[in-house]
Length: 151
Image 1 (cartoon, one colour):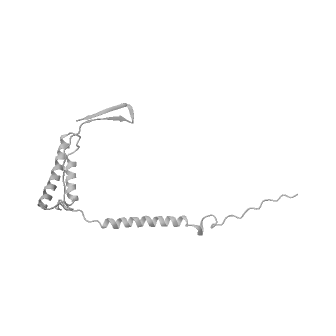
Image 2 (cartoon, rainbow, N blue to C red; image 1 turned 135 degrees about the vertical axis):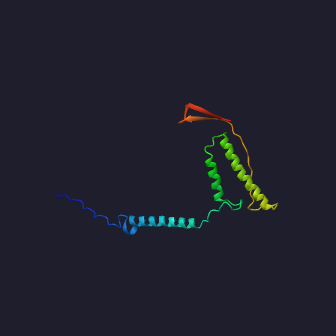
């Protein structure tokens, strides 16, 4: 009676193990990933250089001007904080309303009764007051609830 030892199968080859000719190697995947990333960056750069230069302060009011918007934003920022109901908030609102009114007046005078076309600018300014109350909870704990009241 003899005991036979089981024969071991030979180790799998690279092609049978899932690498080699059956699929791309990790190095190829990395190379393709980097190529796609660089291609996307280059495409973004090409799109960026196609943008037109920002318009200056002297641009027509019917067209957005980055320089005019920056002047307004810097002027509002120089006014400091604008808590609700404060004189600073009212001053900021007045400044924005006057800018919008000047846009409305200059575009209306440019049209001089012409029919409204694609470049027509419609400005509606609503002055609203706000008052009321709402609850503030700390970390969602209703036992520590506080009420904010403003008018």
